Structures are given as C-alpha cells and as structure tokens.
Length: 521
Picture 1 (cartoon, one colour):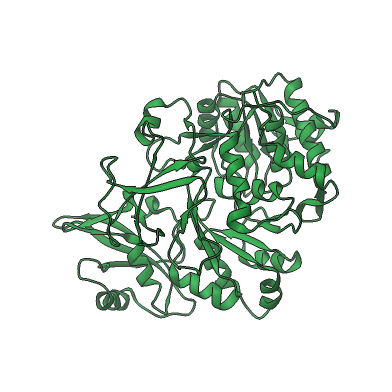
Picture 2 (spheres, rainbow, N blue to C red; picture 1 turned 30 degrees about the vertical axis):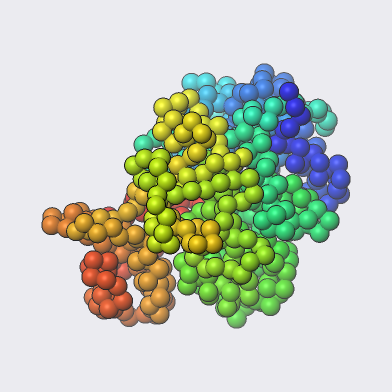
C-alpha cells in the first residue's frame, strides 16, 4: 500500500501554507489550516459512524465551503466520494445512492428555489443501503428541517481536529462520477486516486500554475462535475491557490467578483463566455478584470470561434480550449502554452496521454487525411478504472490495450491538433449526407443578429432527417426566421443549411451550462 491519497493535495498545501486563503465564499474566508482541520473532523465523524475504507459516501452540495471540506474528509477516511448533481429529484437521488451502494449522504439544505435538502431527504428515504444523512445548513448551529437527518455542524463540532489519513493504493477508487445519462441510466465512472491526482498536477504544465505565485480561481463551474472538481478545486489546492466560490452562474455577479477579488483564472463552458459577453456594460471595469486575469479556460463542449474572437477583443484574454470527459478525470487535451492559439482546436494530448481517431463501428484507426473524421480514443493516466458494477458497459468502451472510446467525432491536422466535429450521437444524416450540427451553429452565429444557436436533426419522410435550428437573437433584433433561412441558404451547401429555424428566448441547459439538445424537438 502507498500513501497516495488524493486528500494529500489539501494536506500538503495546509502544511506549507497554513495561513494562506484557500476558500472565499461571500463574507467567509478560510485558510488552508481551517479547511484541513474541518476535513479532519469530517473524517473522524465518518470513522465514528462505521464508514470503512472503500465505502461510498455521497455529496450533494453546491459551490459552498462545505463541498471541499466534506470531499477531502471522505478521502481522508479512505472512503470514495460520490458527488451528486444538485438538481436531482428524490427518485433520482435514490437511484444514485443505491447504484453506488452509498453508506452516507451529505447534502446542503438549499432554498425554496433549489430544494436540495428536501430532494436529498426524499431520496435517502427511498434508498436501500444509505444509513446516514448529514444536512449542511447555512447556519451551522441550526437544525435541519428534513426528517431523520443530522445537522452537519452539530455532528462535526465535537470531533477531534486531527486525523491520520488512511493510506490508499494509487489504483484504489477515489471518486465515482456519474455520467449525464443521455443514453440509458447514468453510469458511475470509477476514478482512481492517481487518475485524479495526476490530472490536477498537470496544471503546472498546462496552465503555468506555480506554488510560489498562487492563483485566484473563480469557482462557478459546479464542483459536483468533473471540470470544476479537477480544474478548479483539486487544481487550486494542488498549488496552494485560492478558490473564490459562487453557487451559480450569473454574468453580472461573476464580472463583479472577478473585479473585486482580482481573479487570475476563469474556467467555464462556452455558454458562460456567451453570457459574460452579453453582460458587459458601462459598469464593467474591463481594464481591471483584464489586468489580473491571466488564464481563461473553456471546456465541456465545443467553443464557437466567434465567441473566442469576441472574448479576445472585449476582455483582452485569449481563451485556451481543452477537452475531456468524466471518464478521463477529465482533461485529455489542451492548447499548448508555448504555441499561438488555434481557435476551434481542443489542442494536443496532455503529457502522459495518447489520442487517436478510430472508425465509429470498430477499434480500427481511420486512414488519416486533414479532413478525415473519426471517433476520439484515449489512453493514459487519466482513463477511468471502469463503470462501477458494469463490466459489460466497461468492456464496450475500453479495449484490452486500455484505449477508451469517447463517442466524440473529431479531425486532426498535420501538426497533431484535434478539432471536435460533434458527438457521434448528434450526427445528422440528411439524404445520405453527413451533417455536423456544430458546423451549422458556427455559421449561424456569424450573422450579426444571432446570439446563440443549437442545431438538431428532426425526422423527415424523404430525407430521413431534416436540419432544424433553435436561435436566440441579439436584443432588439427584428430578424425573422424566414430571413435567417434565406441567409443560411446563401452561406451553406444545399444539404447543410437549416430549412427549419425556430426563434427562441432561451435554451435548456444542464447545471454545467451545456445545451440539452435531447430536450429540443
């Protein structure tokens, strides 16, 4: 057994920089010593309640200080963290608890508009294996309103402040991240301690992180998701950085916080950058933001080239785009720091990771040309152990040589840079022609009246599928759908342009800001 426990990211920084600020959330400002001490109390609580190494413990919490405290406390106890989406309903919570065989659940009580605690309580009542429910309240001294729940603050208050973290093997499971479940029931991706640790430490090469010159990270990506968990939380703690937390993405408050806290690193999905651009006004001190902001990261879905250009023009920072999945811890490729930016590219494989393009219906590599499209396959230190209790599902995506097939279609240029084309399941086949929604979306947002677009395929009697676009217009625009169809016809090949365009005021999105195309019809 080795002592490689993911919690050492916190412990090492707490030892080296005990008085450095680790977490900022509203008026709350916690040092590394305080976060580490609180995590020790969580670990003591879990051991006292009979949680053993390897047991699963669920965490359903927004971006508040309790998230990293409980997260690292679970790891210190040698248990496995199972982060849950805060938007889950009771039935869904119960599914995740039972599927992961979780022994305990930590949940934030929430508000009337986001009743996390109530849904967690309903799920806890329906679950078979979960024995303990700890509820985090805004007031640590308050009692939870959920029946059968213990108050987190009261439960940890009497626990010792020190704890010797359980030694774990590098191949032990540290975290189980559940996939979004776009096809079938969500599956739990088992990520080892070394998967998560190596991915966080990659920030030194990828982002220029330095323990001697710590960054201030804006944490608005939900921490229950792999992007925010690794890139922001674990990445910041690995290099002694400060995490400034916001529980939800609201463009105005985000810009104000970036200015007030002198944020140096911002990570978001494309719709967040779109939202920030729309919120810029005369009250925004762009100069102050640009002066401190040294790194802007995009991931989660393909970044439109036009948004890339506008952010560079208006905020004075070039977005560095990367790519990854929950199953890959998540970072797989990233834009090289020492090379000029290539808008539209997800960069090259990170150190220790390999990528290749394979045929969608086999493991055979495609015959490469600059325009050839294949499915991305990944091998390296970031690839998951497998899907929890699903050997058949694991065997379907990981071959005997350790290659993981992602389901994402891409092309690769002569310099080894990858470019996402689309999800394989989103591919539209119209009259025998392959149409990639992302390409259509990229063209539509070039129209001066178009703010955002999402493209899907809908059934068609003769063509098999027809192309349909959902479009959000710029404020004040009087553009009609017919006029936009006519414009698109002039800009795209006849088999590509959308014959159906629906003008909308909003698009359904996940908690992480990805457009939910499966809800568009």
